Length: 254
Image (cartoon, rainbow, N blue to C red):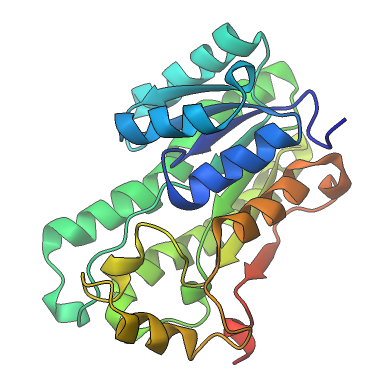
């Protein structure tokens, strides 16, 4: 018996990295998960790694309102239950560079992928929960960079800072409906996005520079984020809202 038995979740960014790790952990704990990712092959690979009866996926952009309406319906079609937890994990980071050198299209994509999905969660899913009297929970995957920004990823960390502010504000605004919002802040992760953070080249030198800023001496693994997310999604955490959890190997205090 897992601690997420009976729960239905939507997890974005399910096709790789932290998102895939969250799906694997949640399904191992008994949850049924509707994954969203723009990468069809990534979705298929995640599907091969988890129990078939606990995972379905939607290949679509998280920045479109229709995606969220479709996800709500698909989750109910597949699992005969309304998803009560949304994990916003899909992310995009511009190539590490001075702030003035980041292309406008990269800047815009950062906000479309990192911030707009939370807006759409609130626009589409939260009213559905309110109408049904469901005490839903939104878990956002932020970044310790919002607390300790790096010069090479300023616009990315600014988008994660927006998630911090929105998480706190939304937690206060919707507590009367028993709808909760929390955020998890990983450090530099061992994920496919890692090369972009260090300027597009995944070198030993680049990783060594990042490791030097992490007191526990290793990168953040998908399992680290998945473990924290599973706790927050469980009934053990049902009195927590508006909180941020640093899963950062000590980066914040370094």
